Length: 432
Image (cartoon, rainbow, N blue to C red; front, side, top):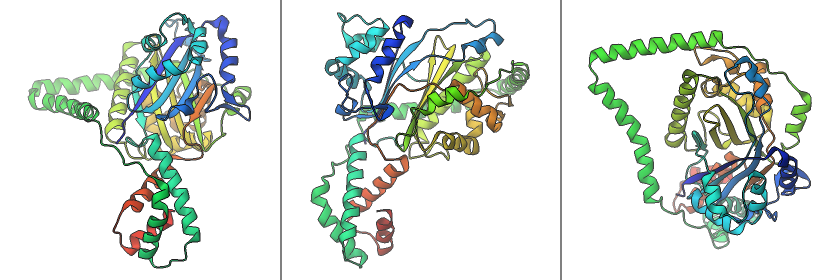
C-alpha cells in the first residue's frame, strides 16, 4: 500500500502585501469556480504532481481576535499567515523538494512572506514546515494513481455492461474481465514500505505498553493517587466550564456569503477554521491530550473509510499556531456545508466537544462531552464565525466522493477475483 503524508508550510504575511498576495492567489483559480485551482495554472500546477490528493493555499487571517477581550492576559494581535497544505502519497519532504525545483511560482507567492529570491527555496520552505497535532486519512494506503485507475475501471465496466447480452453470472463476469482487462491497465498495488510499517507499529504499541506498564507496576497507593487526581481534574474542569466567559457568536450573513462563494463547485468541499485557545495550562494540556488521542485513533483504528460513523471526510488536520495560543483546522469533505455540520452534530457531537471546547467562543459544555455542539444553532454560529475562505483549493479526482472511491475499490477487488459465486457476482454487478 502507499502511505499518505501531509506537507504544511506556514509563513507570516507582510500585512502591506496582503492585497497583492490575495490577488496573485486568485490567478491560480478557474474563472467559473472561485477558489477552485486550475490544475495546470502556471504558478503551482498541482495537477502535474501525481502524488497530490488535495492541496490548498489559505490566508490565515483570524476574524475572532476581538473575542480575546474576555481574556485580558492574551495579546490582542497575532500575525497573519499564509498556509500551504498538501495531502500526498509517500514522503511529503520529497514532494517539497520537487515542487521547490519545478514551481517557480512558489517564489512569487512566498515573496509576500519575506522570502528572499536569492535564497534556496527548498530550505526556506522546510524551515517553515509545521507538523499537525492530529491528522485523519479516510483510507490509509489508497494512492492517487489507484483512485484514478479504479474510477476509470468503473467507467469501462459500466460501458461494457451496457453492451453485454450475457445473463449467466459466471459468463458475465468472464466477459467483463476479458473485454476490459487489457484496456484498464491496472497498476499492481505496491507493498507497504518497511520503514513506514515499523514506524506505524511503534506508534501503535508504545502508548499501549506505557499505559499497561503503569497499570501493572504502580502500587495500590499510586492507584488511589490517580483516582484523586482524576477527581481533581473533573472538579477543575467543571469550574472552568461554569466560570469561562460566554462569548457570543453573531451570525453575519455578509460573511457567510463570502464563505459560500468558494463552496459547492464539486461534490467535495474544503473547510478551514481558526481560533484562539482559552489561556492557561489546563485548557492547553487538555487540548493536546485530546488531539494526541484523536491522532492515534485516526492512525490505527479509523483507517478504512469512516471517522466513527462519519464517512464523508477525505483528509483532516488540526494544527497549533503562535506557541499554542491559536489553532486551525482544515478538512476536505463530501456534500454541502450544512449537511457536513449536521452529520457531526448528529453522530459525533461529543467528539466536537472534546476537540474544540477549549477554544474561545465554543458553546458551553457539561463535563466536557455534554451540551456544546448539541446546542445546534450556537455551534453552527461558532463554526461559521471561525471559518475563513480557502483562497486556492485543488482536488485530484473531481466528481468522486469518499464513498465512490470505496465502491470503486470493491469493484476492482471483484474484477481481479478469478472465482466468485453467482450471488457474489450479482452483488458486484450491482455496484457497477
